[in-house]
Length: 325
Image (cartoon, helix red, strand yellow):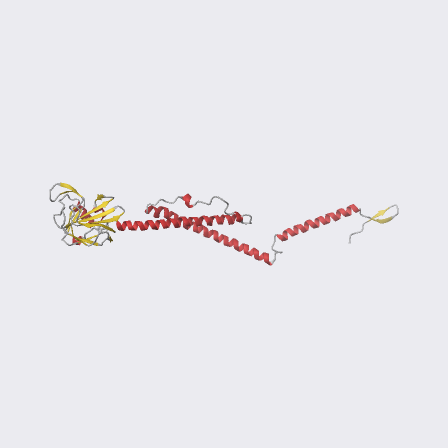
């Protein structure tokens, strides 16, 4: 109840009630309503920014959002780990695998390239966490692209490794006659004295002295191109095409163990030592061709000789003695 105020009237010698003006009443009422409204608005703002008035559904949604944020942090850490592992694989791929197989490294800009053209992430815009979601999606897309590039690179490396394995198997890499079957290594590649004319001439292969009938083995994988005696001076001889530009020749045989067109593996028995053709004594004359040019066979015995055996062979092969053919 509002207080009633009075004043003393000297004229009437009595107290009179003070009547407030209507304008003041209205003004006071206005300020009261304005103050109440501002206070109510402030209280509403405070309540809306606290969990005091949240419904169970809102609380559940809030927990779900926090759970998503946690999962997002875990996903980000996993992406960082994936990027580190992928970077390590890419480094080994460029600097070990591709280098070993003589393949060009994949440029960094090709591995890390983004996606041009239209905005691929337009549908992710307009949300509270759009920037975070867009960045994460971009990272995942780039990782996926890098993995595709790396997968194709490893497929290429596997193919190159298979070809390398075939090449290594094809190169004439062993001695055609076993050491225990040899009488001696008679003559090597180079200038030698002809056994018939005694003139100094180029000897294009190596002569392995051995008894007639000693086994002769293919020095690398390949296909028999010739097994006949229709080449002057060689007598019965075999030629094996190893591919990759390599061919080996085995001359003065007593008989064959293969036929033309037959596929052979390194170490297969292909014939036997003889004395056919232009030959002074039973032995095997052995030649190696690379791109149709004769090369020194002694450089290809890494597959069957020890270091000591190779050193002894090298010493005998370099002696300018008389050849046997």
